[in-house]
Each structure stands twice: as C-alpha cells, then as structure tokens.
Image: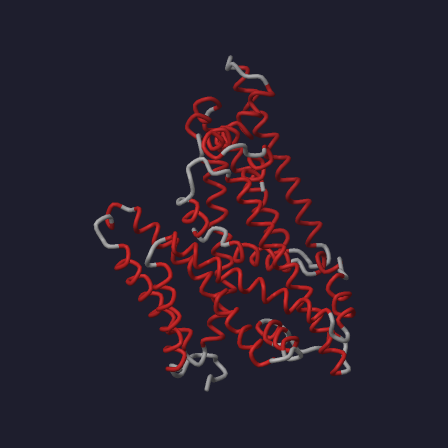
Length: 386
C-alpha cells in the first residue's frame, strides 16, 4: 500500500504485536542484571554458531558450491579504487557489527574487573566477529553457487542482495536436508536470537548509563528496564508501518554516519584534548592550535578539492591538496617553534615536536596501562592521527 513517495499509509498491527513480543523477551532477559544476560548469551550466540556450521557443511557439499567459493575468494581489486564508497560501507559494517561508538562495549566493560586486560579482550572480540563473518561468507556463496547451477545462471546474475542475500541462500541449503522444514524453522529462530542479542547490547548501554547516574540510584533496575523496553517498543511502531522496511534501510544508512561522527569525537577527545592544558602551558596556544588546525584543516581542504574536481583526477587532486596544505601548515608551525626558541624557551626541535605531536596521547596510554595492562604504542598513534 506504499505509494510512489514511500510514505507510510497504515500500521501493520501484526507487526506491532510481533514487536511487542520481541521487546517483552528482551525485557525479561535484561531485567535480572548483566549476569543473567551473560548466561542467556551463551545460548543466543552459541546456537547460531552451531547452525552456521551445519549450513556451512551442507552448502559445501551441494552441486556448484566450488564455483560459489571461487567467486567469494576472487577479488576485483579495482573496486577499491573505482568505487571509494565501498570503504565507507565496509567501515560502517564493522562499526555496526562490533557496536563501536554505540556504548555497548563501554557498558559491558564497566562490569569487568578493574584490571581486566582490555587489549586482549578487544583483539578476541574483533577477531571472533571477523572470523564469524568470514566463515559465513563461505556458506552464503556456496549456496549461491548451487542456486546459479540449478537456475543455469552466473552467480553475478542472481537477483540477491540485502535481506535477500540471507533469506535467499541459507533456507535453500537447509531445504536439502532431511526434515528440511524443521531446519528452516531453526534458521529463523537463529535470526531471532541474533537480533535480540544485539538488542541486549544496545539496551544494556542505556541501562548502565541510567543505573550509574545519581538521578536514578533509588529506582528499581527492573522498573527502569521496563521503561526503556516500553520506549523501545513505542519507537518501533514506525517500522511496523507498511513503509517500515524502507525506513529501516534509511536508518541503517544514516546511523553509520552518526556513529562515525561519535567515534571521531571520541578519538579527538582522547588524542587531542587530553592534557591539552599542560600542552598549552609548555608550548603556548598559538603553536598547539596551529598544529591542530593544520592537521584537520588539511583534510578539510583535501575533501573540498576531491569533491569539486573531475572524477577522473579527483583522487590525485585530493592527495595533492592534502600534502600541500599539510606542508604549508607544518612550515608555519615550525616558524612558531623557532620564534619560541629564540625567545629563550627551554626547547629543542625534537622535544618541541614530540610535545606537540605525541606526548599527550602517550601519557594517556601510560595512565590507562596502569589499570588495564600493556597497551601497544601503535594504539596511541592510531587514536591521534588515524
């Protein structure tokens, strides 16, 4: 019933009811605290992993699976050059799948022992997430190879993408197993479990913030969880309309950019704002803020040149603008440092540039390492400059 303008025209009450059931399950899972949620997660994560391996093994034995796997492992490197938006999409996927900048990881980390090794945990989480996605790709493309074989098409000609990539591949592989209808039911249960598992994380981020604030210290956590779950259900009504699928796509698209912005501000506060008062006292505000303006201003200029240039030369023009503006800015900063040295400030070129570029973020690294253990040096450099 959606018109050409894609505006919602009615509420699908069945979807409202399903959403109510989902939020009721989420409430029951998180209202008893993070320990109970952790125990539930063993099942909500473990069961999908087991089913994934069932699908993987079965899909690899289907006719045409080798062609699908070959397609999966073959890489057209020109895509990274000719379609730069693919970098944004890939980064957005990682942000979303790892819940980076959503607050979920911070919420869960707050329940860990104070001296928990943060670097080790981060590596394990990131590698496990990527490994799960990589293995899933074999199951998907092996099934697509089977579909292409039975339909007499090339894999590239299959009309699958977005939601269809999952709903059009995994059920096909499961339908070839004995008791296929039960496996397919289990598959949709797996999707449900993965969905509420993600919802646990987002809801825990809100609940931890509320429970740790002074304004909500006297409120029963279960009542607070009920309020948050009810609010989540009410907001879900926009997706229960006949245009809900389109609204979901729009939200998924733009939320990535919001999370990029949040992550950028977090890195900026850690890499550039931390101990900035001491940095200004040592070097003076003109030097500190000129260096900051040089770094961020160079990327701003490069982006303007990139988008304003002809597509055939946009990339090279952007890099030229970046390095040119960066060089000019650094020369200006160097002149300010030299003038400060002439006035008798106790600097050397090496100490001045180190204080300006790295000292504050190295101090942050050392302060954090006292609590969470060893942090690689490269972490500090990446937080500030990348």
